[in-house]
Length: 434
Ligand SMILES: Cc1cc2nc3c(=O)[nH]c(=O)nc-3n(C[C@H](O)[C@H](O)[C@H](O)COP(=O)(O)OP(=O)(O)OC[C@H]3O[C@@H](n4cnc5c(N)ncnc54)[C@H](O)[C@@H]3O)c2cc1C
Image 1: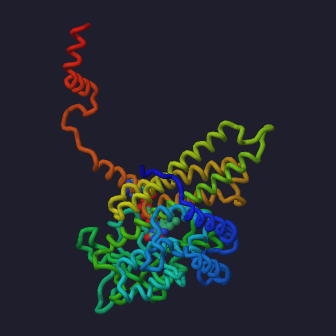
Image 2 (image 1 turned 135 degrees about the horizontal axis):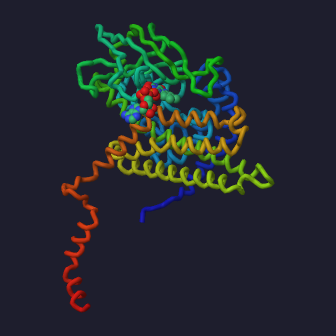
Image 3 (image 1 turned 90 degrees about the vertical axis):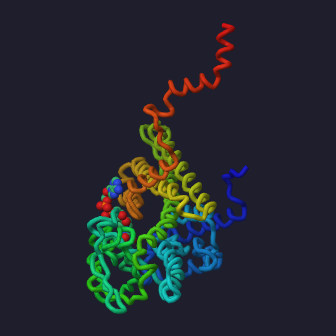
């Protein structure tokens, strides 16, 4: 029997250490560090690197990486259990060396980068000495790469990039951007794009504005999703990442791991919201009794627990299947299912937690409004939910064969006739004796 829902004692000890460290050392950082990606912020520079060293000494730095890149090569199940805890604090992934989008970007650099590119871009990225940006979405449409127009044209030993990108997260802090641009417009969409490494100090690269999410303050310029203009941006030919025309394949490599890591951290965030909801329900009274005594509040708690646990099990099973098959193609249905389920569970639990906290819950003195918007973030970044549902349906339907009869194979008269034919002798004997 191979079924087991327990963590072994040795790894549980590591998880206990991580949990305590996140609670005591990292959660408070979210109140004093504006962005864990802003390497130049002096407060961040003082508080984050010493914590990163503690993680390194404990041997838990960048656990998603294989030993060839200095990681432990943890499988996805262990990563899932660890990322759940890291999801509790915004700065935790950075302290543990596994923050998006740098993880996905390092994944493609490790996979497709030349030795020179790895030395220049990957090594400092893995040490978190620099941060990176992934620049793919365009204003006229993100879910459909066929409408992307930002292009690169070869000019001697250089490529010249022109166009605009939208929601290039962390471009303002990044040392380089990975831009997916059209190099071969006459090819089929899958072979039209190439990836380029664009250092952020390259002339012609301009941030039009830094767009924020709904809970951020426009006046404080807190946005970190850049609207980027590439105006005759010249990069050397050696900055082509992967093959010319192979940008789409590179993009797919990037998103496989990233999507599941987001889900793991979301599982932890949802658990934290659930904890808040439960604490309030057993602390606050109305009409002389605790909120937890009201059946509709009980329903909110029960529904949240059920959705949360179902999601958690789906994430863990997907992680287990990734480890088992070692082939993302075989688990694309599962990864898309996790990605599609994630925003709904997150949004439901965040909304219920807000509701149970009443006016306080709707205020900026509790984190729920932020969390509700963040749930939409999870349903948009790395592809909208609808697109993932289409993937799930397609892959599920691949396992079925059509019925060539006018009536479906489950048609009861047909099944009854088949059963009667199979047991004709039995039926005949019994009919004779009746
Ligand atoms: C917080 C955040 C961070 C992001 N970071 C990055 C980043 O770092 N780099 C980057 O390149 N991009 C980033 N994105 C962009 C993200 O990839 C896009 O938002 C996403 O691909 C959707 O594109 P769009 O926003 O242009 O929406 P559109 O393409 O206009 O789609 C709008 C809506 O239409 C519906 N829809 C779309 N396609 C289908 C379909 N096939 N079937 C049914 N309905 C559909 C969905 O409801 C979808 O939300 C980020 C987005 C967010 C919210």
